[in-house]
Length: 382
Picture 1 (tube, rainbow, N blue to C red):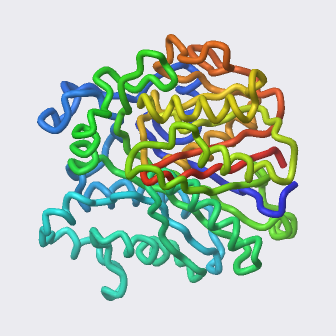
Picture 2 (cartoon, rainbow, N blue to C red):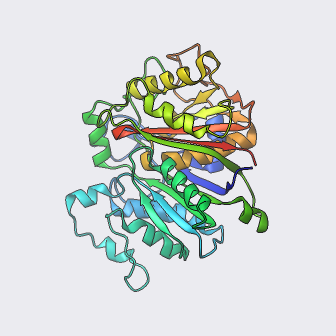
């Protein structure tokens, strides 16, 4: 068992909570809504992955707060020790309110205490606000590193525990749909017209999504001392930046390859499966295939993407995907890749309409983001 372990995890996606999302993934369901099913037809005529029963419209503080309270309520059930640290991962948050410069009366409604902690559209307020709700006095910070934010947030928490700065860290990833995100990807012609189809030869873009997730990390020593449940062990990690282009990944995948190799520094590169970034965009998916091919040649472990089912949740993606990888380890299964019908690389072991067995109890999570940021984390059984 590694020196850092995961003691608890949960998420909220367009398919539901962690256990519901997992079951629906295995059933091949997709949590995508067409424009006619929602109230935002003027924003995007293509499918989006919305979380149900959120207050507020896209990109607003009210919507962010509504989702935030749901995930914080899940975390609060853990009865966290006050010394627990906190890392929050997000890319844009309530960006529409911020960009519009609105003086939103709702800000006063969500202020807590005596006004010392107030949720505002500025990203830097989120860790303070969440820590105040949960009564946490440990170190806290925010990570905003494009689509690799969630995974890098987990890695930074692992480093803090390994360095002896703190015994336990709560990592929360959160993202809401916004005009800013949808319009931005639409301008890049990167939104799928029918729903993301990761690694499919006919893929035509990503599906914007929203969601939140958390993982509770602790030192193995503390977990043993406190008789805490151990869901997974952190076996390795890697971070890199190829700095090739502001949006496009490096075609030869050097950055991602470096991050994955670093994640396997302490062991052989064999693993049971890869929870890939798999956005469904032309260049991201082909870059990942290049990376897997170089790393494993014709013996690549089975890989998959959940973004065809719950959309791309941006800052929350790495945390949600880590939570779902824990389910993979527990069940010994790799879920289908929703939307995949005709693999671009049929000679490689990518899941499609059916689940695969996880033959080795090790699973790699990897994410790549704008600016050439890459992150990988290796999870194993306790």
